[in-house]
Length: 124
Length: 124
Image 1 (spheres, each protein chain N blue to C red):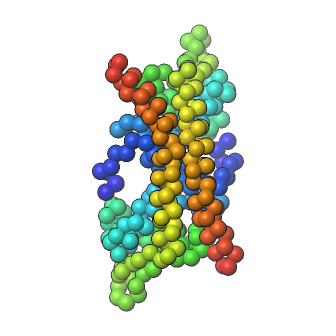
Image 2 (tube, chains in turn cyan, yellow):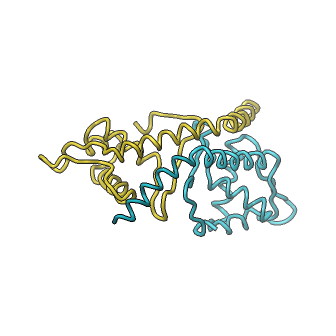
Image 3 (cartoon, chains in turn red, green):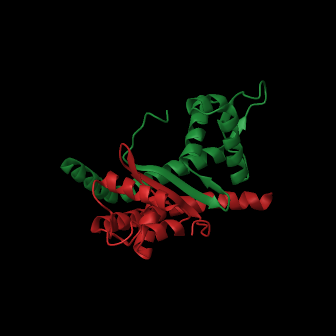
């Protein structure tokens, strides 16, 4: 999942929201994977991270926003079902929107910079 | 220099320009520090990195763009004066422009997300 994509242009957008809290691509991708898989464990696995790591990222998000972004069903095991709360969905949507808006905003500069890379590479 | 600034909003913008090459805030800050100090060593020092590390970042930039972004005067020591080439200046200017364009493009989402952080923090 992580290794497959080569994107020319924006590859990392981190947005700081308070002194010790930010949202970045890893946290957004994890939220999306939780929404898709319905499980923190499966989402973590899909991103090549341990359950412990995925869980601690969810905790960091919940703590940073001061409310739950992910809701876990407490019916069975601690690694049971998980869904995004409305807050989690809005955070994810807004992050994706920021990525899109950034890609548009930087497109001309990316093209110009890429032309340097390409033309010089051709001369080499 | 690195520790002083807390910026709410955009804090890390990395732009991939080829399979194995990107420009990000560290590389841009180093170019700017070289322009300001006229020296790779002084620029590295201002950013809390070794001369070796600063030099290798300059090398990575030159290799990635396929031409020199930094010109060193070979008159005296290997750690002598350094200036940006026109290519280096354009890369720096375009990176700064991408940062500004991004800040504008994400401003509304940042405000909305920050309001979650702030309002929930107040309730806690």
